[in-house]
Image (cartoon, rainbow, N blue to C red):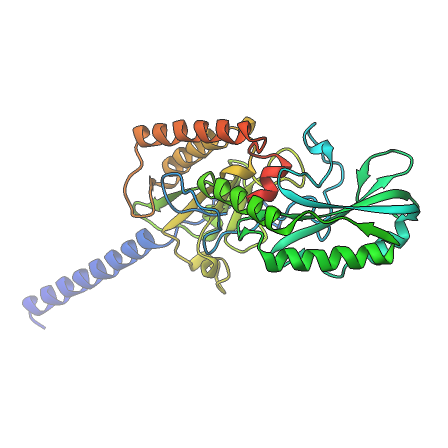
Length: 365
C-alpha cells in the first residue's frame, strides 16, 4: 500500500470522526435541557389548582377562552367551601347576595330540620349554566347557612346567580330555577316568593355587561432562545419560584397562602410533552404564564409577581418574554398594563366586586 493510500485512509478516518463528533455535539446541543439531578425535587404530585390568557395586554371578555379553566363559586352546593379558610368581612355575609343573585325567600309555618332540607335538595343545583343555592336561617345562630343535619331552620331562601362567564341569566334558566325552588319549598312545607322574571333577567343582562367590560385574563409567553426544555427542567425551574403541579398534566400553579383559594398564577406547557412515554426526550420551546385578574386579591401583588417570575425564568432558562405573536414585551409595555390593572381594580372595588372576593370569584367563573 502506497504512502498516498495510507494518507488518504487516515484523512478519511479523521473526516469521518469529525463528522461523527460534530453530529454528537449538535445532538447534545439541541437536546432538551434536563433538570439538575443533584437538586431535582421529588416528583410533583397533582394538587388542587384552579385561566389562561395568551395576550400581552388586558383581555376583557365575559367568557372563558378555549383552554381556560373554570373556578367554581364557593357557595356552589356542588363544591363545599374549603374547611379552615379565613373569610373576609364581606364574605361572612353569607353565600347568597342580592348584588349577583336572584333570591326567592321561602317562609315556613314552623321550623324545619336540616335533615329534611337536605333530603329536599334538588339533584342538580344548577339552572342551565347558573349555580343554584339553598340557605336556611338557623334557629340558634340567626345566621343564613347551607342546611346542616341536626339543625333547625325558621326560613329558607333559594338563589340563582344572575351572570357568570357563560353569560347572563335567561328566561329559560329562570324558569328552571323556579321549578327547582318550588319543588324544594313543597318538600319542606314552605311558601316561596319569586321576584318578577323580566326584572331579574334585565338585572342579569346589566351585570353581564359590566362583567364583560371588566373581565381580564392576562398571559405572557416564555420562549426558548436556543436549546429546548424538557418537562422536568420546566418543573424544576418553576418549583424554585413556588409553583406546584396542577390537576392537568403540563400545568403548574403558584398557590396563595390561603388553602382552597384560586392560585395567584398559572404556568402551562404542552400537555402531550408531559404525557410522553419518555418525557425527558420531549422538547418544549414555549410555556405560558397566566393571571386570571378577578380571581386574585390585589394585595397578593399578582401582576408584579408575574413580571418578576417571567423575568427570572427567562434569565435562568435562556428564554425571552413575548406576547402571543412573538413580540418582545418591554418594560414600558409592562408598565402600561400595570397602570390599566390598577384602574380595573379600583372599578371593581367601587362596585363591591373586589378582585379575589367571593362575589368576584363567583361572577367571573
